[in-house]
Length: 233
Image 1: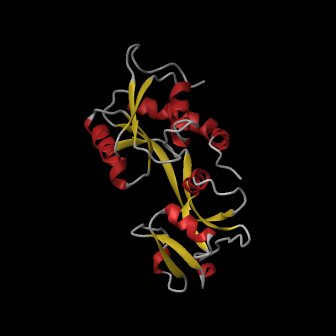
Image 2: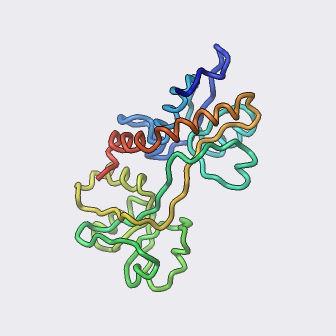
């Protein structure tokens, strides 16, 4: 369906990413949501590859410098569009609110946070001018695990997290099923893309093959992958 490989018989793509649970992980479940989706697209296009995990700054630098060919998961910026060829979005990073299941908080607007104690990770840049809203009660948090414990112990009413990251953290912390509620509405949603180095001789063809796979398969594959990693209700 996605055509024969555009690479020479002995040519392999160099694919790299940093660890970003659960999008990129090293676990008994597999190598992560984004890894499964993008490498599934590469396999469908008969594009053979070698995969490495490296620090994010090195991933960007080596792809720009020609030592790496494909980045699995990247957000779009004006500069990155100049540096790399980005695929179409294959999923979104959704920032949702997590509360105890007895409250089931749903976000409608910043005003819906009025009077609530909101766990916010120190120095984390939240979207939607969240930190500037004066009528909520900010609760300082060291990290996501600390925020989850604050909500569970009723020191905070809600926390904000990427949905998949939050579900993974709850699973890793072995929080009892049904104790926490993930809002259906979201504060912010950021498209996630793959990227190919611009000077690869087949860059545009690789991006086209990935885009076709994402268009045909991303939605249903993503649901199956989330079930695989235990990230559904």
